[in-house]
Amino acid sequence: DFITLFLSAKKLAEELDGWITAAGLPKSSDVRGVIAPHAGYSYSGRAAAYAFGNIDPTNISRVFLLGPSHHYYTPKCALSTATVYKTPIGDLPIDLEVIEELKATGKFELMNLRVDEAEHSMEMHLPYLVKVFEGHPVKVVPILVGALGAENEAMYGKLLAKYIDDPQNFFSVSSDFCHWGSRFNYIHYDKKYGAIHKSIEALDKMGMDIIETGDADAFKEYLSEYDNTICGRHPISVFLHMLRNSSTRIKIKFLRYEQSSQCKTTRDSSVSYASAAAKVDA
Image (cartoon, rainbow, N blue to C red; front, side):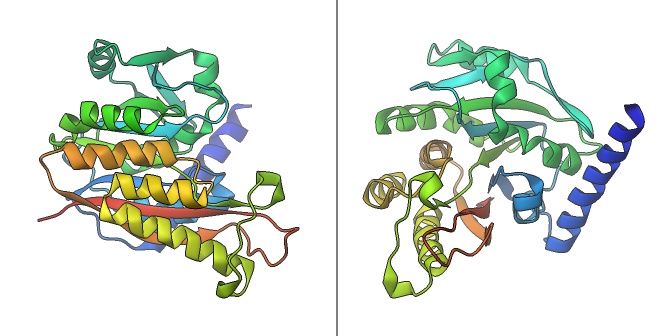
């Protein structure tokens, strides 16, 4: 009922506020994008604050959301057909003008509302965005990033790069990091790091370091060598290609790394969360 909804909305808003305050980051207008996790807030909400807490909402009027597709297979990127994304704490209108512009390139497919509603990778970024942009009207451009090959990653990166050069545009890239354990069919373990969770951390940090260099090809090589189960690998790759092709120099820096639990035996499982800010590099 309405009261419960109101209370849970209030609790959600307070939770997000609390995490942002706890992260204690200075807001900077140089921050033009983030990479942030998309698990349930009880798992990754605190880590995500280290991405969203950097945002200065003052001059931003549009947020591009790049999220991986978890349930729906497409070798392309897909655009939302919705007109507004609703959250318990506020709504975000979709920028229909930019959606039309992207549609006109002929490179995108449209996702039906069922696919849109089932996908949590962008959904989990929405309340944080509502919170951060409170009192500042922004529109969102949701782009579902499918299972892209290297050529398509580069193609979408080139196509979207021009949007980076407009400082009113912001980019929210959604990804969790290593999903480790037999339930994820991934049990890479390098014993030289000691405990399993230390090996996972080393593997994730290697990927994070490569992402920070901005080298999309090196990131691709890392993924093909270790097959690290980074679910937002394609959105991250597209973003790296965008940065490579834009005339604004932007550098990614990771600010937080967490694991849902510490794996000690092969019966354990965990998901890693990493948060980064993409900042204009003077």
